[in-house]
Structure formats: C-alpha cells, structure tokens
Length: 461
Image 1: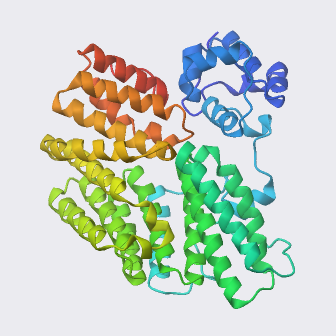
Image 2: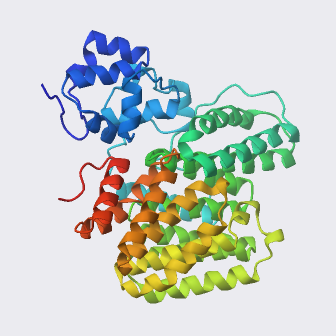
C-alpha cells in the first residue's frame, strides 16, 4: 500500500512509529529505512525526490552503503518527514537556546512579513546608532542564556575565534553551508562564553567583532541550508555585537548578507531597504569597495522588481566605486569582491532583467557570466554553480537551446557535490525556462534533470 501523505509529511506518522522502523532510525541505518519504505510502496524515485539525492545514490544506499554525514542525515530526515529525535538529530536544549531560535518556537508561525519588519526596525536602530542591548530584539531573536565563562581572556583567545571563523568560511565557500554549519554553531556556543570573562577594553572590543563575524557566518550557513529564521536570529545578534565593536564595515557586511536572504525569498522591496541601510554603514566606514558591493546588490533588487533604469544606474555606481577602491585598504570582509565577482554581479543583474524586462539584456549577461566562471577557482564552487545556472538561462532565452542545456547540465553536475539548498532554489528559474522549450529533447532532458536534482517532482507535462 502506498502511504505517501501530504507534502509536509510525505510518509504517514504510523510508518515511523513501527518498531522495526524505529530501531533502524535509532541506529541511523538508512539502507534499512529505505528498504522499509519500499515495502510501504514508496518508490526509489520518490525517495530520491524527497531527500534531494540522485536515484543512483538511493540505489547504492539500498544495497548497503552507509550514510554517516550529519548534514545528509538531517536532509533525509527533513525530506521524508522523520521526527528528528528518532534519529538523534535534535540539538540539545542548551545549544538551541544559546545559538538559534528553536524550530518549534511559539513564534515560528509568525508571518514572514512581520519578521522582516521587526528585523528592519532592529537594523535601522543599530545603523543610526540607537541603543542595542537591553532593547526588545523581536520574536526572531533568541535570548542566549548565560553560560560559565573563563576567568580572564586575552588577545590569543580572540585570535582563536577569528582563525576558526576563517577556516569555517573557507569550507562554506567551497562545499556549501551544510558542510560546516554544525561546526560553526558549536564554535559559537564556545565563543560566547567569553563574553562573561574579564578582559581589557581592547580585547573586549575585538571579541565583540570576532563573535559578530562568527554569528555572521552562522547566519550565512543557516541561510545556505534553508534555515531562514535561524539566519535572521544570527544576523540580528551579529549586528548588535558589530556595533558594540564599533565596526561599521562589519555592520555593512551583515546587512548585505541579510538582504541576500530576502532577495532569495523573492522579497526585493525588503531586500532593497536592508541594502540601503548597509550602504549607509559602508559609507560611514569609508570603504569604496563596501559601498560598491551594496550598490551592486541594490541593482539586483531593482532588477527583480523590473526597474531596469534604477538597476543599471546602481550597477554603474558599483563599477565606479570598484574602480576607485583600494583593495589593500578595504575591510577584510569586502576583499572577496574582485573583478570576477563584479562580472558575476553584472551578469546576474542582466540575467534578472532579461527575465523581467527584455531578453536583449542577455547580450551583456552572457559575456559577463562567462568571464566570472572562467575566473572562479575550485575554492568558489558554489559561485561557479550559480553563474553556470544563470548562463544556461540566458542561452535558453536567446534560443541557443542545445548549448544552454549543456551548460545547465554542467551546473547540475557541479551542484550535486555541494551541500547547499540555495543551489537547488537558484535552479528553479532554469527549470521553468527549460519546461517552456520541452519540444526540444535537450531542453526536456535538462528540465527532467533539474526536477530530479531539486526534488520538485516531474517537470511540466
């Protein structure tokens, strides 16, 4: 009997509560779990779609291949609707309270637009210099419990936090947020204990900045794994700490990242407001490069709204700021933005305009994206994946379907190795464009591959 249920609970709860299934889940024997699901009429293809795995991966697991990686186990549990506790995947209570809002928080059902407004009010208060600590941060922000702290800390302790953040950020860039988020959360849990320690003013100020950046990374990796409430919580706490550490350039970075979350959620109006606050902080920091990054992202928001005049104006300013910027003097967070990233943003904005305004914008998007792809190394796999996806869309829009489909398959091949929900979400426009051209066998095959990769089910018939 087929027991596939609703989208939010793909298998009926009774299946998970059967003793044989509970035993397999407790031992994390995914091969046994999949075999039991097959007995209940769940096909290999359905398992693959729900868990975000390829059918070949599911087949290998059914044959006995073990699944050990925490992020993969968590994704399987989420996709199938397995209660996390059955697999021992739930966070312990202390960590959940300290570093992120619990998934079953009484505020978790609050309307997303309300959460955005509260975050924007919090960000505006911080950006214009209002008091931060002691104020109500809103329902999206956790209230970390006080934890035992070392008696005294020095600059060496703070440097350890900074070094760990750099190493974990490298993993995020190369393999996706799912590869390191748990490690970031654990590092943050430890690092926050230092807030109660004795330290000189110089050490304390640098500690605020170090922890702000670690919260910033926690927010970004949460975003990359689809945990949006947790991302908002971390970014909110990062803003307060960055202001305490008097780092306007870090405030700008945090707001840039939160704006990207809203862009990803197709809320360009809210994204634009956050980017504009970030631009104020960037200007206060005196960094042309930071200003340029915020302008480029404002252009993206305008492009999503179909406002090509404003998008191109902001993109032009981003180019000008980049040309004037002294990379050596730029804040550390902004130095990632080099000529490749500028090309990537130019291509991304024009890709958006090609979809929302006029396909003529593909003529600028294609060479810009091609340049960025050629410049990104193996340490920027996620960025290459995003740009390949956009490039494929542009070729489809131009009518070069076979070439566009080949590039789309390259994007999927690269993304399959990444632990990033965003790569899947960013491919949904590609699937729509491929579906529109389903009479072409290359486009039809691409649409099917994207559907399988994203777990969105069958492509349009």
